[in-house]
Length: 289
Ligand code: PXG
Image (cartoon, rainbow, N blue to C red; front, side, top):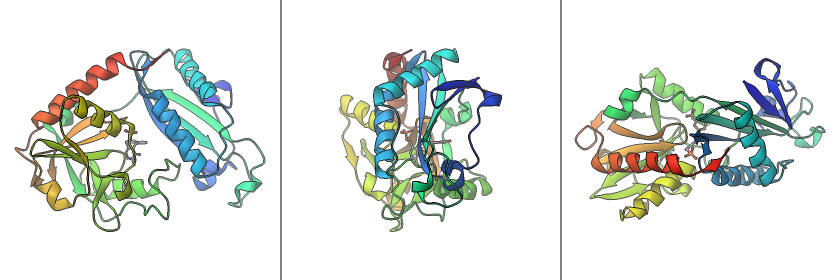
């Protein structure tokens, strides 16, 4: 495996950055998780735009133009001879000293691109649906650390994940500090009620997921009414269908939330239709490499 660091490709064993990098010391940096299918990078522009937005918000200068960044990604994929890949793109503040002041990071920002294979949830969960549980760790308040910023500081999500896995569940439902449904630790959440599709708006603490946007687009194309709407756990419990979306997970059905059976306790009709359309889209859309 070859890893891109600041313009050069290194063997995995040689791909190293400084222990003084503020990405490591403070989580001071931003990232994206991107997928490719059959040599097509899915929604690359959307991921790059979000990366630059996250960087802008934390006053991090990305030392490449968007065009150069896209070339670096496609070249890394080519070099690794991967047809289907999961990529991690990272930009950190770079090497500084042992103080959190980013002005002390005199070296350039570090740009890292890792292209690897993806480990999905087990196939069984896509067929039968998964069970999730609400955890007590609430989603970051946007005035503290805005969930729209995909920063390297993911402890909020990791703490929630630990709570879920400690209880024997694969994924955690996170509420915001007002108790409204926000999202899961690495996935957005959708519900179906009366044949209409609902997902919490960004201001509830949900990341504006690329897969979330894609699913909303597909639904509109299928003439399904879509709503970015505030909802509570009660509305989730009484929904007819529920599913999660994310670049890694794609679309995964949820059949139980906090021990309440959702709908008929199996992946719903609309969920299955959206999964099928999503799969079709990944086969034909994307940036070729
Ligand atoms: N919410 C959060 C908090 C995320 O981190 C999503 C939603 C889905 O967004 P996209 O754009 O991918 O549709 C994410 C993305 C993991 C993992 O291991 C997930 C993400 C990032 C890194 C790791 O599940 N998530």
